[in-house]
Image 1: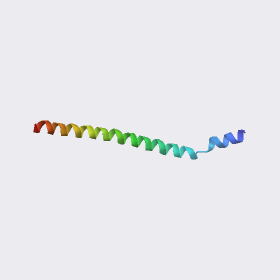
Image 2 (image 1 turned 180 degrees about the vertical axis):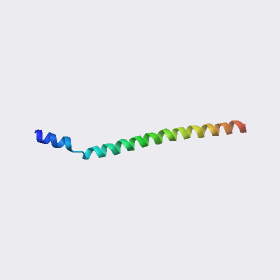
Image 3 (image 1 turned 180 degrees about the horizontal axis):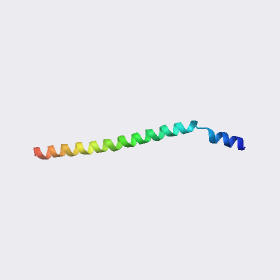
Image 4 (image 1 turned 45 degrees about the vertical axis):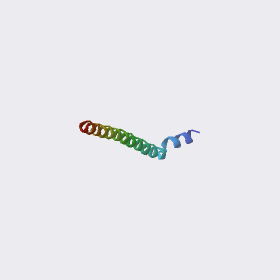
Length: 54
């Protein structure tokens, strides 16, 4: 049993997958925040133009 536990603790193959998942989730969260920010600014610009035309 201790031999199996030592081998399990030395195995790093799952760590790479977890790192990629963390990077992908960080990028996706930043994309959502960026798209929301751009959408809000664009909406405000169109509302200002619409108000000016009335």
